[in-house]
Length: 348
Image (cartoon, helix red, strand yellow):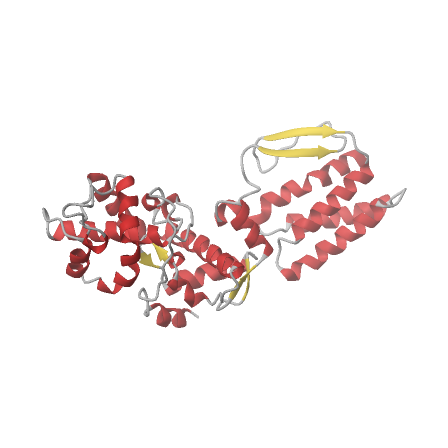
C-alpha cells in the first residue's frame, strides 16, 4: 500500500480541487486548518492557500530582503508555479484572512491590485508564524496525530457525499496536507492502520469506510485522541444506581457520585446494557462473548427471583472480560464495572 501511495502522491498538488469557503484566519495560525498545532480539521482550501502564502513570503523575504513582490512574482521566483491553478481562485480571500489575523500588512500596495497582483509583505507576527510552521513539520507526534484526524474526517466527508474513499485521493483535498506539506505515504498508511485497528474505520487499507465509532468521534469529539481518552477525563460524573455506602475512584480521578436506592435486579439490567455497549467498541471477533454474557444477565434480571449462583458466575465472567479489555479502553472498562461492583456489594 505504501509504495502505491508514494507513486500516486507524486502527481500532486496540481489536481487539488478548489473550495469557496473560508473559516477565518484563526486556524491558519494553528497549522493551516488541518488539526496541526491545536487547530481544528476544517478541510478549508482557503486556509491551505493562506498557509502556503506565509511559507513562500517567508522564503522570499530571506532570499530578497527589502523587496515586496506580488504573489505572482513571488511564486515564479520560488519555482512553485504548479500551485497557481489552486492559489489563483482563492488568493484574495486568503490574503484578507492573513491581514485580518495580523500576519501580513495591507496587501493592496498600488493601483488597486487584486488577485495574483496583490503584494505580500509579512509582519513580524507573520514571520514568527511562518518560522513556527517550519518547526511543526519536524514534529513527528503532531504530524501523526494530525494525519489520523485528517484521514478520519476526510473519509467521513467523502462517505457523506457518496464519493470514493480510495485513500490515494486524499491528496486532492486540503485534508492531505500538514502545515502546507503533503502527508507522506508512510503517514497515510500508518493513520489508516491505526484507525482501522481501533474500529473507527472499516473497509480495507486502500479503501477505508467510516464505522459508527468513527462517526461519533467526528461529530461529538475534538479529535481521535480526545475520543479514545473520553473515559479518562478529570471530573467524570458517574450516577450510581444501587445501595452503596463506600466510596468509588474511577481511573484515579475525582468522581461526583449520585446515589439512589434501586434493587439488585435493576442494577443487574443496567450492567448488562453497559456491558453490551462496551462490547460494541471492541474488534468484531471479541464482541460475541460480551453479547452472550449481557444477554444471559438480562434474562436473569427479567426473572422475579434471579439464580444468585448463576448470576455470580456471569458477573465473574464479565469482570474477567473487562479486566482484559484493550489498554486504550481500560478506563472506560473501569467505569463499566461500577454497577458490577455495586451489585456485588449489595448482594453481600
